[in-house]
Amino acid sequence: MTDDDSRRHVVVINDEEQYSIWPEGREIPPGWHPCGDYASERECLDFIEQAWTDMRPRSLREETR
Image (cartoon, rainbow, N blue to C red; front, side, top):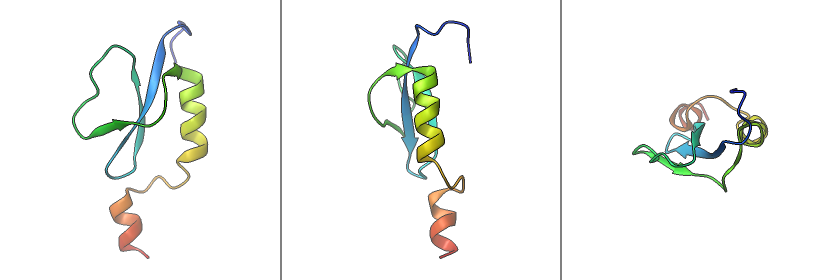
């Protein structure tokens, strides 16, 4: 995490239900979609910590069911 807490980020998710954060003002890469509103880096990371409880990609989770 950077020392600049004023930068805002958005949580992004891909088709495999993997999460990341992306800084405001930069184009979100292909294959990733915003998941919520822009917030502080800490708020985004806290969201991911609660939401991403199984780190395996979606395709692997479905394969092992």
